Amino acid sequence: MTLIFYIVTDLYGSLMLVASSIMKSKEQLSLRLLLINLVGGSCLFLAPISLIFFYGGLIALLCAAILNGLSLNGRVNWRHFAVRCLFSLLLLYWHSKL
Image (cartoon, rainbow, N blue to C red):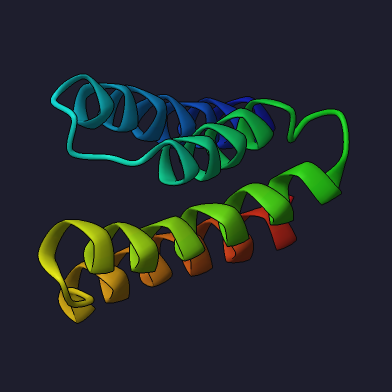
């Protein structure tokens, strides 16, 4: 069960890294937002080492979701943010049961 949790966490981090790289290559993402996404996604890869990376990665990616919405759309997409929050809460709950 622990292995599956870290695989899901790594997939989430990977998706965020790929998405931010694609957005940067299309010149739609600022360097600051790219760095926030990269730090958040990378922290999730380091989650097995320390819980601080897991929590820090989730917080960074939630902050990035708000800032990406403001930067790309001029407003926060609350439905998108709610889905991200729900997924983060599910990961936190799942981790608490390990």
